[in-house]
Amino acid sequence: MSFSLRIVLGLLFALSLALMCPAIGRAQQTLVLQAELMPIKSGGEISSDGNAVIISDRGSISQPVILERSKYRIEIKARGVRVQESWPAMQLKIDGVVFGSPVTVDSEEWRVYTIEGSVADLTAGNVAIELVNPVEQNAKDHSRLEIDQVTIDQLAPPEKNTRVPWKLAVVLVGPIDSTQHVEIPLKEAIEFIESRTRLVFEVQYVMTYSGHNYTPYRFGKDLDGDGVGDQVAYLMMQWNMPKDVLDSLPVTSPYLFLVTMEGLRPLQAGSALGIDYGIWKGGKPRPYAAVPTDQWWYVNQPYEGFSSRAAQILTHELINTIQGKIEAAPYYCRTLTGESKRATEYEAQRLLKLDDRCYEKLGTNAD
Image (tube, rainbow, N blue to C red; front, side):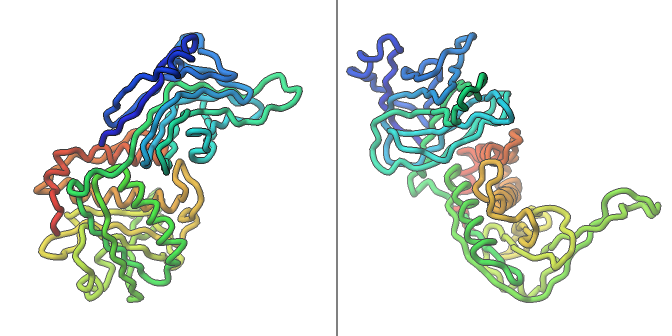
């Protein structure tokens, strides 16, 4: 993907001239703005090493740009100084319009904070970062925000003929809340993956009330000396489902089972298996994932950059099923790994491992 931006690059002392005669630039995929070079600073100052901008007392920095109508991911590398248990919060604005929700910068170490949103029309204005913490009257110290750089990525999908169809069957096992447990988190999970890959999902839903079993797993300390842990937790595996239910499923790339545990302790928030233990459909094994939806953590509340923690769980398991297919013959694509400890950044890093070579091997992903 590529997009063009016209950028005003003038230094502060030559700002008026730069705004009158903006430079024309073209960015391939990513545009990086160094904070110390962003020309408009209000209540901000250059850090002592000259590589960042320090903002305090509702200050801001901004950079004139022109953005096309599209969806964007904007990453801000920042760190904060906490005062009286209060971390600084920053608000991103484009052309004076709020872009995303305020972001709390809750670390004194450099971290990347991600904001996504859409620009509806051609926007000619400032990409601005503001410190939005209220200033306490008579306070000697204030929260302080330090900005290193701003990275802008356009998330417009590639041309239609480069997209890779990805069929997904979602199997609702038992009484599942179709809105809270399915529609809301699954929509966010699919949008997260589609905006960062060439995959385009085709989702089919199946509902079944057929009874099924659970597979027990032993873990923890072995106090009774029988060679296995004394605690027991359970997973719903494909061999726990009745054969007639599996036989009735449509042929898709992976399968996602949304289940309830009926009071049993789940071994983990979700589980995924590759083709070695996959569901045999259409003459080949298919990866699948199972996620228990009746747990306290499976909720539509914000979690590490996701609007819904349930969406974070589904995103993670769906990416695991993608991994389960592409790691095997005939694809042999790279392992989808990440390094960040923040959920959105970690899952985004994993999806970056899907390269052109892998997409070329997937082709039209004929099932």
